[in-house]
Figure 1 (cartoon, each protein chain N blue to C red):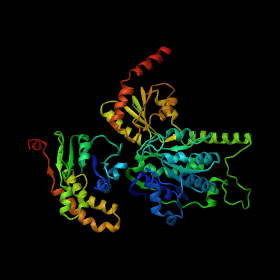
Figure 2: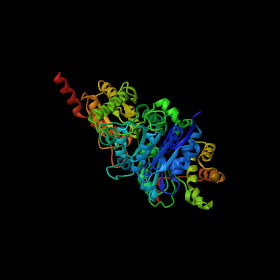
Figure 3: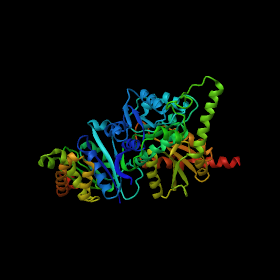
Length: 188
Length: 374
């Protein structure tokens, strides 16, 4: 198994930490992992992105041009990375703030209302975990138990009381995933 | 039992420094290397092992603190990124001249000048061709993974003390900033003065009670003595070439074409090799792990087997010169690399290999010319 993922959005949306939790979850089930962030001026306000690879084999390049999955949280990132999804790959995005929707017909596209659902849950910061849940519904590459184990390992003790909330958010994401059909959008 | 962690390259290097039993770290923050000093400050190693961590007032101060501490036989490190490493060159040259052990880490960013904070490998020349003034070389280790960022710290200290010479770990923004699995080695105790003397000889300024005084200097105004010193240094470098050269060959056995790349470029090139082999093109990768000593003979030998070589570096063409010198014009050698902080993709590397080497008419021409000479 090898899954090559790009996660992109605004700095502060939890892009890098979503990638980190995914990487930690991979370690919990003995996968090889790599996490390659953009660390430039982007993280100070513009777009942030991270390339995450989980594989049962040794990972060669941590830096890639095309991905099995793109997880997208803002318009700029959608514009930039829509074409980086391999044919037959997956594009998952949060429609919040998106005015120009994806147009590719050779990939699978899904929506998750991460931001809206997180606000409904009373904590906007949890939106990245809702999105992660949606991704794991599409591609169950790591078990939920391993995500929780990864969270325990990556979070300092003082945040461990938030783990049940994170689990709830992941489950919410799994249950609220919507396929997005480009054709329907064009007909509208 | 080695401890498994998910860490950034910079953090793994910092943790490995504590665990290697280092006595001190002197540094100054600069992107993309700041996590080294940040991590060390957080860890408070003075409580764990007694190791000292100090943020100096400048890079210049830091390297001279390294010079001072190394003079007393201590295991010391400094780290920085490209512009900061330029500032340290005077101190590094003095350390080489005074024959002092020490580890310098460069997490390279794009230059020249302040350049960019994004990854680069444009400090190859500076690392292997001097950098500072005078007849000296640095033993240069180029890690290509977070694991190697950790492992190479102890290796670097071993080499530094074996030869009484400064050692450079040449990393870059990719390897420094990315996270991977890392197996951390167990904590080694810091060495006592007596242990250092027993293992590495009695050369340091540890107090002259009961012996003649030791003098640490790079100055010899008598030309004959200075020449002797230079010859002594050259002898060390010959020995490094004979005993401590390191490189890795990947998929070279049946290769028709060869990529030479180190550090992060080697990782990206390895993916290009995988893509090429999927297309039926037999490409191999030679990864120099030490940039000095350079794997000249391995390259010379491979040049009898392959039809052309591409040197892939995140710069405008530096290591390619050493590759050309190594293969002595037996096969064409070309360079490919992005600059300015842009990272080349595996696809770009494969495309460059096809354009510059595989489908390049000059390769056929090269062969013809060779046969016409024969």
